[in-house]
Every structure is written in C-alpha cells, then in structure tokens.
Amino acid sequence: MIRLTELRLPLDHPEPALRAAILARLGIADAALEAVQVFRRGYDARKPRAIMLVYTVDVAVRGEAALLARHAGELRIGPAPDTGYQFVARAPSGAARPIVIGTGPCGLMAALVLAQMGFRPIILERGTVVRERTKDTWALWRRGVLSAESNVQFGEGGAGTFSDGKLYSGIKDPRHLGRKVLSEFVAAGAPEEILTVSKPHIGTFRLVTMVESIRAQIEALGGEYRFGTKVVDLVIEDDADGRRRIRGVVLEDGETLAAEHVVLAVGHSARDTFAMLRDRGVYLEQKPFSIGVRIEHPQSMIDRVRFGPNAGNRLLGAADYKLVHHATNGRSVYSFCMCPGGRVVAATSEPGRVVTNGMSQYSRAEFNANAGIVVGIGPADYPGDVLAGVEYQRHWESMAFQAGGGDYRAPAQLVGDFLAGRPSTALGDVVPSYQPGVTPTDLARCLPDFAVAAMREALLEFDRQIPGFARADAVMTGVETRTSSPLRIRRGLDLQSLNTAGLFPAGEGAGYAGGILSAGVDGIRVAEALALAATGQPVPRELSRGTETPVTYG
Image (cartoon, rainbow, N blue to C red):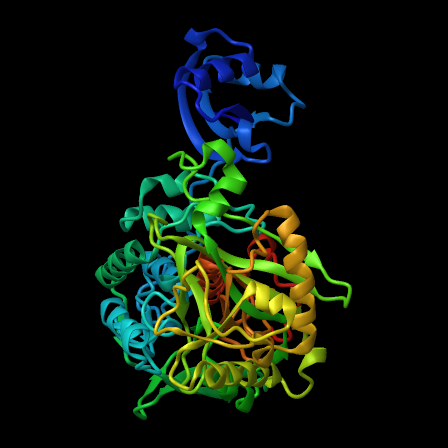
C-alpha cells in the first residue's frame, strides 16, 4: 500500500472530500483507487475559526510500483510501512519461568509478550486486583482512608489506571511497537478509534476492564498472577567469572522464588523497593524530575479559547493545551499530564503525605480542565545519596499534608492570591474537584521558593497564550511531585542492569518511560531482550536503541 501524509481538509468536510483529496494528491482516476484506510486523523487548531483535519491514509491503487516511482522524492507520498509485530524468539521446551514485578502498563506488556512467546511468566503485584484496588482508592477520596498497598500508585494496572489514559507519546518508535501496544489494548476492549486518532485516550473506567481482559489472556497462555505479593529482597550471587547475577526474589512472607531473569517494572513510587535495590548494590543514579501543583479552569473556557466557534464539535472533543515557559531564574515551567474534562485526585501512597494527579473518564465530560504546572528540578537541588530525590519529594508532600489540615485534604490557593503573594481564605466560581476536599491556604508553604517565583512568572506568560489562564479564581491544588521517577536504574545495551545480570529494569520506575504508551513499549522491548537472553541470542542494536550505556558483563 501507499501512505499519504498531511492531507488537510476543513473540519466540516463531506465524506467524499477525503477520497477526492487522495485522487488529487496522487493524480489518478477514481477507478484506480481500490481501497482507503485512515491510519491517523488529527487536527490543526492554530486558527480556531478555520480548524483543519489532518489525515494520514494508506491506500491500495492499481499500478502501485509505477505510481511510487512517479512520485519518488515527494515527502508526503511513499510506501506504507509494515507495522505488524514479529516475535523475536519462542520459549524452548522446559524453559525457566521469568518473573515480572509490577502490573502497570510496562509490566503488563512485558508479561503479555513473554506469555505470547511461551515463557509462562510469574507476575508479582504488591497491590490488589484492579476492581478491589478501585474500592480502596475511592476510600481515600471519599473518607480519607489510605491503603498503603492499594491506591492510585500500587495495584493492578499501575498509576496509569487513574489518569487521563493518554495513549500517545513523543518517543522514537521505528519498530512501531506503540502499534502493538494499541492493538493489544483494542483486542482487550479499548475503542478501535485509539488506532487512528492522533491523541488517543481511554479513561479510567475502560482501563479497568481492559486490564482484566489482558490478565485473562496472560493466564490462558500459562502465566501466573500473585496479588498482595511484595518483593522485599533479591537473591544475587556471583557466577564463576565473578559477575553478579540474579538468582531469585524474596517475598514479604519469607518465600523465595528462584529465577534467572526478572523484569523490574515497579513504577515511580516504589520507594521501599528503591531502597532495597540501593542496599543490594544494584546500580542506581539520581535523575531530574519536576514539582508543582494542579491548576483547574472551566473546561468551557479552554474549549472557547482553543476552538473558538468550533467548541463542542464532536470530532474535536474537549480541548487540551501544552505550555512551556523558561523563567528568568533559569527554571523551566511546563504543563504536565493535562486532563480535559477531568478531576484532580489524591494520589499519595504513603501515610501523612498529600500528592495530586489528574484523571479523566473516556467522555472527558466533567466541568473542569486540569493540568500539572510543574518546575524542573535536578540533583543539584537535593544533594546527597541516590535516594535524596525521594526524600525531597517526601518533604514537600509532608508539608502539603500539614497545610491541608492533616487529614488528606489538599492545600489550595486561587491564582489571584498566589500571584499577589497572599493566602487564600475562600474559593471563587471555579470549584476544586479534589477529594476528600481542599483547604484554602498559601501554597508557597509547600513548594521551594525558586518554584514559586518561576510559576508566578509562567502563569502570566501562559495567560497571554490562553486568555483567562491566570484568572483570579482559577484553583491551584498542591502538590504534584510524582511527575517521574527521581532516579534511574541504569541498564546496558542488552537492557539488563549494569551490574546485575538477569535483572531487567523497565518502565517509569527505572527511568526509561513516561506515560502509558512509552511504558508499554519499554515493556515489550525488555520482554524481547529477556527472551533473547533466555535463548542464548544477542540483542540486536535496533532493539537496544535508547540505552546508551554499554554492558559491563558478558
């Protein structure tokens, strides 16, 4: 087939207009066009009164080879790539079972691909099954009751289950592994449109049923799940050449599971696991992350600014935004994980701390838009050992807990008060969505001074880009600290730990992904590397792309 990109048509174009645009681009008669498949549909809303739909299509035509030759060199016409997935290995008879720790999108896809290759993985999850986890999460939101092992961060589905469910990423993906992730999601019950829209998302409730379906598939292929099972130690031995190798894992109940290959997909909030890895000598390093707040505006305001008279068009849905500002104090301020038509949620996993995140359902139909407004920070801001970033997060989360009243209510402040440097004592027309509730206060108590200064400057700049962004009654709720992992578990070109063979750090917790799609892609790559290691094959360079550090063992 032939792929055409950048086919631009008006938002309200009639259905035949797409076929006509294809014929015009290729310069062929209608009879020569045999089939059309929309690969991607996005929109260009830079001119709100003249929004354009932008298509990428794959077409079957008569005389394909001659047509491609005629259009050789044209950037927007070329052969359609093969996006089908090919397994890199098959488990030999009697192959040892690998262990996958964690059931977020990374662990889920690693386990699924390993199961599809015949390896019958054992999947260990410290939290509960997704529906029980949902009940535990709502207990925090409705009653202020935290379950430390079953919450927004821990449990089947990972942190992405309680999010906007965005399924797009800016990662380079030459092997189209993202397509594999989305195809598996569709097979598990996600709407088929996620394969074609430019900014697919799925929402929390649909993620729940999808995660259950993938679990059933893994179990049908011989995989084994163990919920409520925390890994508290690793069995590491030196081999005959003096190299450290994983030999198994130790569970909280004292049981030891032997394994030669372990996928470590624990997520960015597994702080006790990070401490265990440090104590066991696994190579870790500090990594930058970001800190800030959630900001809420009426979704209708964002729709009007972004889409003008086209606000409410069903093809556009609820409007989003992406904002960046480089402050005069040298800090970068940016919007993070924007959730159209969603809510701000309590996302702590530790008692005595407040953490915020954003969540949307598939419909994105709630009144407020919310996004993180966060400031980049790095190891220079939290000097110390490799876990200093974790302690830095904890400090500000504890300050937020105290400022909120000590009962998991969150500290909140009106934008007008924040800009004026005065505490809020009441709220305005924008009703905060965070549960179990907010306490009006001064967010400067819960953030570093440099972050406060940078955010004040950024809000005024963002208001120039989105009029009303700095409206006086917009609500800021703190704190947002879990933007990414504060450390990286370094791995080599074979995707194994730099100094512990057989251990495959993966996903957000290891510092190699950010978001559902990129985490799922990393899970596939790690599963492939594990399968190749288990069958005695080298890891080809195209599979190891993105891991810059050479291996330090054979």
